[in-house]
Image (tube, rainbow, N blue to C red):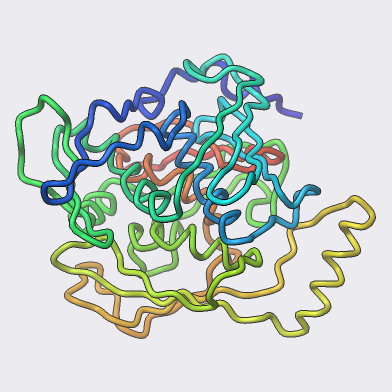
Length: 344
């Protein structure tokens, strides 16, 4: 069996670990926003990893593979830090470090971080974080839409023309050829062994990567029994050109059977990843999408054969900045599946 430190102890600290929010300006019109209080001391990369779980907890979700319905375990994208995320009242969660590798410059074993963050802030930071490494390394501004128009830039840096997600989608498609599974502690429902996911299997074929990243938290919370509307409309981060999507939850056929199976496996202390519903994404409006996503385009969220959605979310910042090789990890602590980027 491959041990945690065998995989990661020789890996140098990635640019992702050096992201500091104080180095950036995030503005919408005359409004300047800071997330330092929301992070409560967490590394921005780790905060991005746990946000979808905190968002899901806020919506009443629970994760069927965990024995405790109020907690979930996760790993940072570098595989240095393992945490337990625990639901604690409205808009609150406690993140406890359960594992800390030699490479982490910030988090130590046993540390706890009490976060109090609204769903609105979660979704905004979830959109902002994947751009930060690109802004830092390329010295360029990035603009995107999230309820209003936002811009990210480096402090004390000469201004440059802002680029948006549509431009970055084209850049990524020129650089990234595949995402490859290079190792794991054990397989999961999506990944059983070493595999290569060509560019059109990283996300649903023909669908924009940035739109796919956007839908992850609301789709995840609906897949895992969130107490929320069965349908929600969201708009992609494009500014001049964009698509609007519906995220729709529908019960599985013979749903009661899946409910019984989940109850049975929990009863015998052998919890499994069992869901009761299916989640679909349907494009309901298009305004000049450069990726040629058409109105009516639809897919089911979480189907096998693609890169696991949780892994995609954890790797997305690296995908946006895909100009170098490295080893990155899915958030599932029991599996510890590591990935490499195949560059053109």
